[in-house]
Every structure is written in C-alpha cells, then in structure tokens.
Amino acid sequence: MDKMKLIESQFIKKDFPKFGVGDTVKVMTRISEGPDKFRLHPFEGVVISREGSGVREHFTVRKVSYGEGIERVFPLFSPGIERIEVIHSGKVKRAKLYYLRNKVGKRATKIESKEEKA
Image 1 (tube, rainbow, N blue to C red):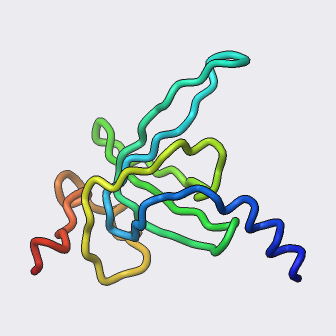
Image 2: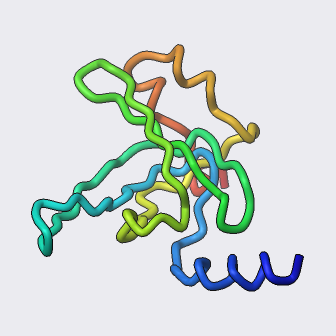
C-alpha cells in the first residue's frame, strides 16, 4: 500500500487553485497541432461535480453554448490541463448540481456567489 501512495505522490505536483462545486472555472487544455506544437483551448463553465481522491480525482464542468448544454469531465492531474482559473466562486448547498441540466438560460448558469450572500 505504501508503494501505491509513493507512486501517486509523484503525479500530484500541479498547483491548482482551490475550487469547489458551484464555482465558475476556466480550464485551459492543451491541444496538439503537430509533433512539437500545441495551443491552449479554454473551456469555461460551472463545476457541477467533483469525485474521487488522489490521482483519480476528476471534476465535471458544464457550459451552455448556442442554447445547447455541454458537459466535459476532466481528470484533475491530467497532463492535458495547463491551468485552471477560478472566475466566479459560487455558494451551493449540494455536492452535485445535476439539476442544472433541466434549467434554461440564465437560471442554468447563474449561481449566487459567496460574496453576495454575506
């Protein structure tokens, strides 16, 4: 068991900001355009779930583009993620925000922030 933790600790070296469910984040992913070229592509949306622990941790980001909801699952310690930026911190009372799938328009993206409540 100690060998597994030792191997996992080698992968957990990226410094990401602390974010949770309900936060609006921008995930910058690496897209290869050639053998030695890549570009960064942003994916901005609301974090609707976070699961797993250690190296196996992943999170789901949902955005609405042209009236169509798009969800994408990102492994947290993936080499394809360059950086994560927290744009807006939201305050929610649930661990999973799957109910946003049924919402349309501003209700699907607007979540009250922690600052607005205080």
